[in-house]
Length: 161
Image 1 (cartoon, rainbow, N blue to C red):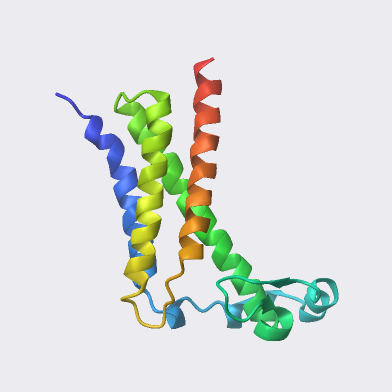
Image 2 (cartoon, rainbow, N blue to C red):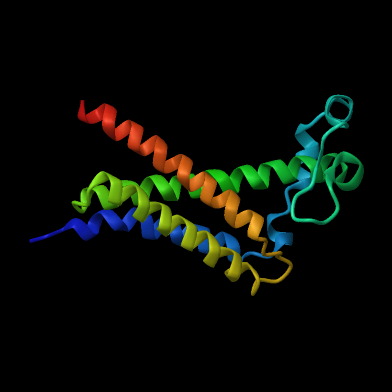
């Protein structure tokens, strides 16, 4: 009996985790109150007040515009985007590889899967209260996916040799 479909279970579960996370309004994911419990605001202001990032065409991300808590939360949230889709890229790479596709096909198919899911995730967020869909997040998610795929490819090559 062919059980190659079993390799897709972790991919589907992880997609479910992403979907669930995107279903939550921002208020349920707001980390700002907790951030200030663990961060020395003066240290952050002293060392990072020069940082200003234009992300999404709105108000630049800076301590002046977001406050210390909002500034740190921005980097945590974007790091989470990158990491979560990196994991999706790795899981899809291994699932496709185990299903018998050639490595070059596996790279492109897993990249396509990640990019499509990143786009669908942003569309899904447009239907979620207090969430802002951004094409920049899809690009960031896809970059995370590529990183996960490349790491998986490297690990698989080392394992095989």
